Length: 154
Image 1 (cartoon, one colour):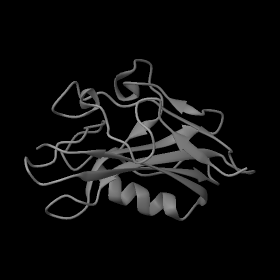
Image 2 (spheres, rainbow, N blue to C red):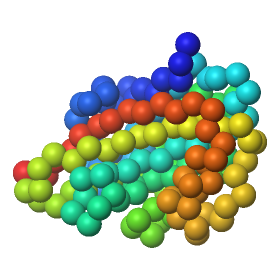
Image 3 (cartoon, rainbow, N blue to C red):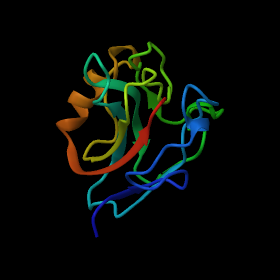
């Protein structure tokens, strides 16, 4: 069984509902995964938009997700009581910030990438940003799962 990432909010390749965008409620969408590989010690997740006018724009980075976890609930970035760490996104926030493509720019594709890692945690500061966190995570990937959602502002 291979690592699989899904959301109850949208199908792979489908439209991300407005409430999960910065034009709506800006809520983190619920995600679940199955098929963890042997030896997984933690997970890391990024959300990025390669269709942004200035190049890939990173909306969310989460790391040090414990190995026994297999979901991130809706609004996981605002849940009380700690939990996984968030990297600073390209908006400058250490949380999820949803889609907000320029009006009339066409359909943007938002790639949710979950990596099963062979280390219990990554030693990177949240302020280092998503790109730095993901570079470190890539050194430890056992397996990766991808989910893509779309969003457009006509």
